[in-house]
Image 1: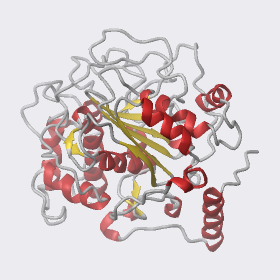
Image 2: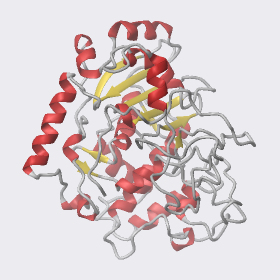
Image 3: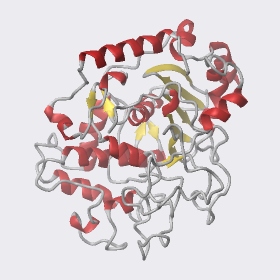
Image 4: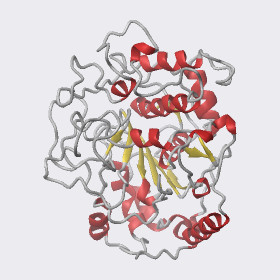
Length: 424
């Protein structure tokens, strides 16, 4: 059995044990609709800065607090051609700003990383509306909420979030994935759906009348994203922020939709963001978010399914059971060439914007890595490949042995920092 003796993790374990013994699981106030969950979630396990500024870890504490080697991080900074930041255990462990990139507090366009923000915003509307006479669900037809649909009139909200709602047929095996880069084909209409939901009772939704106002109230303000702006009309681009706000979005999803000891998103919704939506269409895409996959994934503007792993040290995202949700897939669609079994459910997810605006989440390591201007070809594995050696150097089991670490980690066999929930 893996034994972790680092001070931070030991303290977290002791606190978790105390919480379990006392029988007190974290809960939220009624305004956050936390009573809608079907199971108890140990909110005390999730650590984040709340609405306060990030707690920056001092260099001398990087090994004990973050498990990161400061000397290796210095080397990485020297080699890096772009800006990046690392968040681990809910703390800002390290950040580097390349001289050719925007300043630390400068808010710039995250391009298609906006899509993941949009998926979370829709999820927040789903969560908040669950007790209203007309709640929003991903199983709703789009024309339940809006008129004048230019794509398949039978498309459900979940189909649009997975970028398959444009297909003439939504029958299993006939749904092709095609990336809606600018959002104009279908996904921008989700903004109209959100506005139809909040129009039921603007006061209930904090006085918001537009998707942008709703996101500002229910995402930016709650997560302390003080340097973020998004009008909410374009689901394909347009979220402007700094690296630190990007990291807050990543940590929110990494922590199962919990922030500041409150559940703000359904656990099921976060699962749908960070796991494949329709394996017959794309094994590497969840709700407006990329996920690690072994084969049969589709990438933007490439009319082919890839047969090699997406990342050499990234565990794939696999559902706990099949079929699931709206998907009729009976397995992970790996053709038997790779296993559909997983010891731990720890697939890596990625919000990806043009030019290398990336937010990578590693649940097994309680790690978020964000990059600015990492390059046109930078994708899911790029942030992790950049900083991995600084983490593996002090891993308690595979200290300095990246090959052995990656073999176990990628197979889902090694998840030293996975925050496990009670049985659902």
